[in-house]
Image (tube, rainbow, N blue to C red; front, side):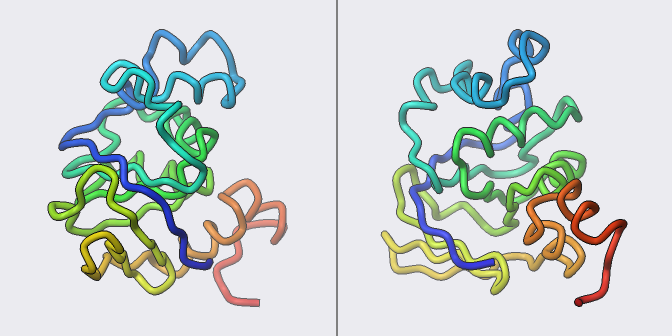
Length: 169
């Protein structure tokens, strides 16, 4: 998995899944591209129009608390978010991100500001804040999660390997 570059879109602590995609949309359609147009709209109206493919959602503590449905990471992925970067994650959201193929990075985000240009290298466990010239060491992902991500998510991983493969091929 190669390094990704994009702009930081910052949010605070306890960004819950209902802020990522409002409950009023969750049951109206299964079309993630349609739902993506409403990403973060309750806390940042027009957010979908601010992001470019490969940009990052950056948050503080406990990103993804709330509903355990996969719509939140699926909507972020459909909106073009390259990875979610946070100081810590709600565990079910963290696993849902991996399962849908959306990279997650646990790192100290306190020095990252809105609009900072970042380079995120999941495999190396490094987040470079290009704007500020700072390199942050991220918490490494376990090898099995790296494999699932590199396969495009859990469903793709299962299809590719005919089951749950842990070893390198």
